[in-house]
Image (cartoon, rainbow, N blue to C red; front, side, top):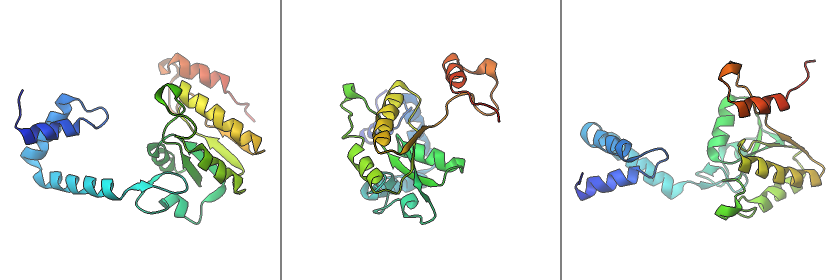
Length: 199
């Protein structure tokens, strides 16, 4: 269907969001214009402000308005623990768990030579500078359990090991409350390989 130029541009712009196809973008555009124009204005203002003012934390590379993100600026965090993640969304997920009080380093991706993503793009030199400061005692490699994520964790683990620091990998396996019959075979195999003794 042909739309007016402004409506067509709005629909196309909404399609840049992950998981939003033509129908979803059309539905969002129609909703904003038919039922919530003030919400659309607020969304446009917030998006413009974020694009203009949000950058990367100079220390951990998390998204932030200032020079340091809220985690790096917080005085009560454990400086001996450094959790390495692939994206700012991963920081949010770990923080929401409430079980971690250390610092972060955000790679903004994973090693992918075919896509032109190497150590420089992941900020490995900055990561090494943090390790060389001397406060970190353990690096938790919390990259995704994909082939690329595992390769990235292995690469970073070697960097950590050369400095005599402890490198650990987040556990992968059966989710809490999950039933074995519904767990995929790859996850179950990983859980069996990573089994722990009961003390």
